[in-house]
Image 1 (tube, helix red, strand yellow):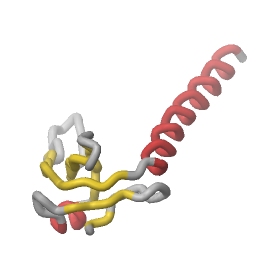
Image 2 (cartoon, rainbow, N blue to C red):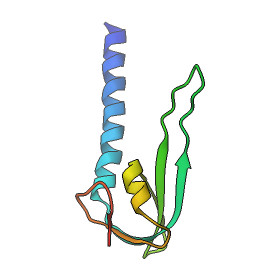
Image 3 (cartoon, one colour):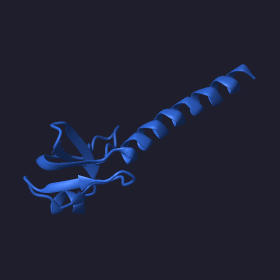
Length: 96
């Protein structure tokens, strides 16, 4: 019984943490310029299967850097210097 309670508490805590970060990401809003594009290759080792990642790095008008993981198509649609805006309620920025 005790292990079951600890497992439930652990799962609830992890769920709460991920929900908080998702809410925070969706709630934020900013406008900025693309300053870097990063591509991380998939790890093809026998023991690991890390997927590839496409990351856009924006410098906001307030001077902060924001990293956004996007799809390959979105990654290819952006060029350095492009402007983007992320509105509150959206998960991803939109090119402007």
